[in-house]
Amino acid sequence: MTEERKNSGEPFENERSTEKIVSSENMFSEKPTLEDIRSLQEEFSAERNWNQYHTPRNILLALVGEVGELSEIFQWKGEVKVGLPEFTEEEKKHVGQEMSDVLIYLVRLADRCKIDLPAAVLQKFEQNRHKYPAKKVYGKSDKYTAYE
Amino acid sequence: MTEERKNSGEPFENERSTEKIVSSENMFSEKPTLEDIRSLQEEFSAERNWNQYHTPRNILLALVGEVGELSEIFQWKGEVKVGLPEFTEEEKKHVGQEMSDVLIYLVRLADRCKIDLPAAVLQKFEQNRHKYPAKKVYGKSDKYTAYE
Amino acid sequence: MTEERKNSGEPFENERSTEKIVSSENMFSEKPTLEDIRSLQEEFSAERNWNQYHTPRNILLALVGEVGELSEIFQWKGEVKVGLPEFTEEEKKHVGQEMSDVLIYLVRLADRCKIDLPAAVLQKFEQNRHKYPAKKVYGKSDKYTAYE
Amino acid sequence: MTEERKNSGEPFENERSTEKIVSSENMFSEKPTLEDIRSLQEEFSAERNWNQYHTPRNILLALVGEVGELSEIFQWKGEVKVGLPEFTEEEKKHVGQEMSDVLIYLVRLADRCKIDLPAAVLQKFEQNRHKYPAKKVYGKSDKYTAYE
Image (cartoon, rainbow over all chains, first blue to last red; front, side, top):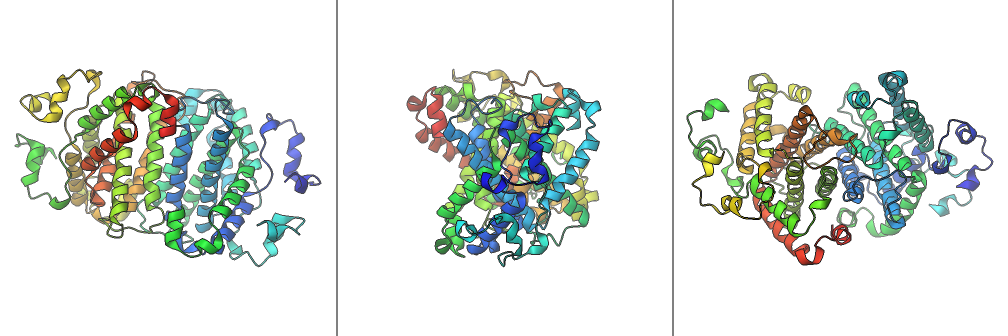
């Protein structure tokens, strides 16, 4: 991954050096993008002749199943700190796997619904900025709860 | 996957021009990437002083809430076709919004758990290729079900 | 509901002999009641010294996990008919087991939240009767969707 | 509620007087039973001509939606104590309403799948007693986690 990117002059890469980034130590890899994941999963399904099973509601229920598996890892933990310091390495790896399953099915669902998920996310951020003006809701948990 | 790509200098970008892509009309926008979304949400939360609420289990429950809202759009529909031809434009837009909420919280959860989600997804694809060899499970719904 | 029952001394028991019951062949067993299940689970947890883990959010996440497992049984099925005629006996038994897990955790959650679940359900039916007057929403799927 | 039961010699009734019952103050009302809820919901749907929409997967997705709504009440709360002392009366009432919605759809799902839910729960308790022998798992959170 790093090799692919080291000579990249792409706009988002450069954000790494801006002041905006608070916690640079836990940034995501730049690849795969959502489109990469969509394409990988499309190919994966086609190679197995599984598109026939990938109707929207089938995929949606599979997504629910994966959210359930993700929840099970957290279910007996009580409150958990940022960074999961209480988790073993094996447990953290397991969390990453279940998150991946959720993401793969979510991307697949968008693809099968012919919805441009990355574009939809940008629109949602725009909406959220209007819905929750920073000045109005700053640090107010009651507002926060009420607005959610 | 590796074989298909090993001679490629810009692996993901070039896929667009290969024959593999069946449904080029519904490809995702290349931006925002998962890292872009992570960064946007981090900034969004910091501006509102909301990081204090973003513990892993708080975010996980918020994710479950959004999956519920996504499910509600599909709940009285009976089986739904690929591309959602039965949905109104407004309903399709709503689906995109709820998917976005799920994705934003999933990315935020990974961020707060300090898990590199895109890297985890690549590993998961590698695992899935071993778990479901194309030849063995090709078009077999019984295998498919059993393997899932 | 009240009108139908106002002259009844043993309201629920007598329903069995009224004309209202359409599908008497698939009625539930009268026992265990919700209170029986609550009591059984309380005893089960106490005997294992597990009450310490049964905080509301722990149980809630366990519930989400079980809903996920229930969904997984239905995920690759496409639309499914009333009575599950396409399911094997083993699959039907599995469905009953996962439904039971969902119910046990839901009852446990109510118990740990000190909420009288059966009483709450009766209130909810009362609310729903006001929210969806039979005459207004009769057989209208659009109304139905809009009201939900 | 108590009046209905005071002369009852039924097995579950008697548990009330045993030493096992730790927290008698938060016991559930004895009515409605699961069969009562099933019957009430069947009638409610029939009166509105809604049975046509109540296919198993439609109801399952509605159930997922309600679990989402229940989760939303808990999402920004951090860890929550037994009995919900931090919740307002209004919030507690809301919790009871969402739990009721989950239960109503779960019962409806069982009914539409022709599964005797109370009977299935009793079998599940029997299984759980074998799976988690009290002596073996007593107070051991690691065992507990491993067994779950």
